[in-house]
Length: 500
Image (cartoon, rainbow, N blue to C red; front, side, top):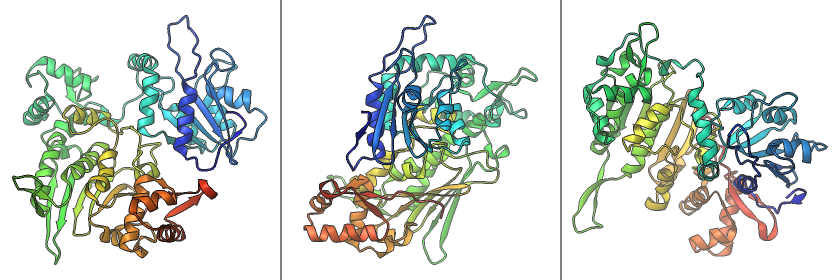
């Protein structure tokens, strides 16, 4: 692929796919230590569209893809304006005189790096990303579906790397992972523990020693090194504690619905986290207006906003929020125009607002213990932020897509409740200037991320002039950008919503 000028119209995802194809060509060496080498592919994109690629072992047995690319193929090139796409987090340790790939990348002054998956090996895990970010490199993770392809090709490597990670001594744990000195097993709610057992379909009884062992392996309990006693960790208190706010004052979801004319109904949910999703859903069903579903012979009441989407969003706010920010609570706010969910904490490292707003956020969890427990209880998949559920708003229900924004310390997800409400709710400048037809068109492009004029014309059954008029207006209001030329022209949404 070296030296080839790529045709106009490629997106970041296309280069991710190129890196994955390159990864599949890896030539892995047999090692006497029994370690399975990873399959890795890397692609360098120059500002003019030229692309060069490399894979592990391409020119010499054992050589890393980034080394082959930067030092062997492009050693005479200025890479300071280039973008690197690599399927695996760059290594951070190499035996002298070799240089780690993360350092080669920063030495080459590459400003943006797209990374497929984090290397779970304890010598690397997140350290490569941290090195890049500390040196001013913008790091973006591959889309989740592409991460799965990389993981599938590297099953044996990942299995060994995870085993090595388990065996090494961990760095000092964050407070939330540590046993709480003032707590004991009786601090946990038997009701919450039983709820977990029942919903996760576990074979334990609450009082069994085997269940305590299971909770210890899970990270809910830990041995206090000072006295050897088994105590709940911070995660244990949040998930199952009788009174989580005794330790974590910010552990509450504050809900409110504004009916208008100063009529506001509020409710706080500060129970053990495993109980909160169903309690919140029950409250939402009570406060949201209902309509009659007549699609079957038996009529039934349904909320005017799809409950499964709202449930997913609330659970994600519980699972992914930052519980270490003192005084920062989570919020669910409902009024006639919008539904807003605010959770403390910026997006997890290497997840961008652009990825969230194009529904391509990868799978990285801030609170792995909470995520795993909720996964066992069938509340959430470990696959990320419930992106499919958010996309379904337009595909299944004809509702506008939600928007993510961040204003320190809150990540906010806003659901406009109607197309007309988008004008009043969206932080994207220019949206309020669109007609109803144009709003529908803009939402379509947001969902697709990029379209041609023909795509737009055929989807809405517009004539050519009307389609061109809409697209030109979107461009003039900086809602989309036109790329390419002639028959390769396409339009791409500008998904860079930032702090409000």
